[in-house]
Amino acid sequence: MNPRPPFPSMPFMEPFTPLLRLFQGMTRKGPGSEASTLRALALCPLPPHPAVADLGCGSGASALLLARTLQPLQTPILALDADGTALDDLWESAQAQGLLSQVKPCSGDMANPDIPPGSLDLLWSEGSIGHLGWAEGLRIWRNLLRPGGVMAFTDATWFEDNPPSEARRAWGDWYPTMGTEEANLRTAMDVGLDVLGHFRLPSQDWWDYFDQAEARCQKCDGDESLAETIAGMRGEMNLYRHTGHSYGYVFYILQKA
Image (cartoon, rainbow, N blue to C red; front, side):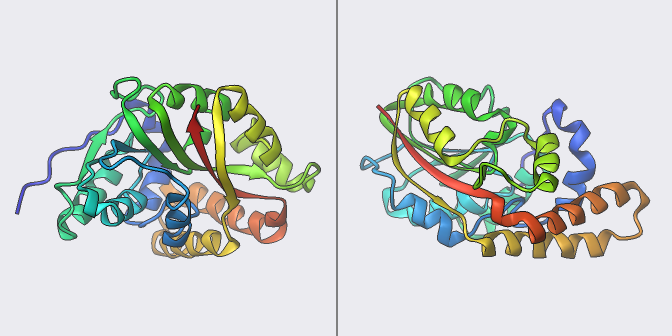
């Protein structure tokens, strides 16, 4: 068995340490599912031997699924994240599934990845572009694609123009530039991306994520250093329970024109 290499965390991840501790071991660190990933992948035109990167890959649920699905193409997948502990989990999962020849975990900053411009056929990312901001993320990531290359990613999105005040206040803190589907698609087209498709993640994707998160909250209850983080996570669950009709994740599939 190959020894696991060290995966350092990027320095800017330090403020997120409590949340990363709470989420450690979770297969998904945000809403999503195999069904949603495969639905998006089916909308992505790919060449015979695509160059693929999963940015903000977390513990690698989508990267591993992409590797299994694209295995006949023998496609190497660069799996980049700023959290070394998540990459540790990904490496161990890839080792267990016999996918280390395809999945390449890498510590790095998705705002400035060490990826040559114009080199990717498929850029994947689930739940991460919000850390960059929609317009800035599109600008940075578009430059990494070859002509005709595709980016497929999820992002938190408003479903209503006038969401409940409770939801607007919370997301104003978490993601102040969060847009509607219409506004996001318009911005994408303005920066030279064609829209191949988009769809809302089903609410079950959220509840499956919350079920994992609640299990971790219960396991960590009593740890005073995580008390605030646990309370915040449970507040997020309660917010979705009451106002989730007004927002959610959307999978966007965009092609460089």
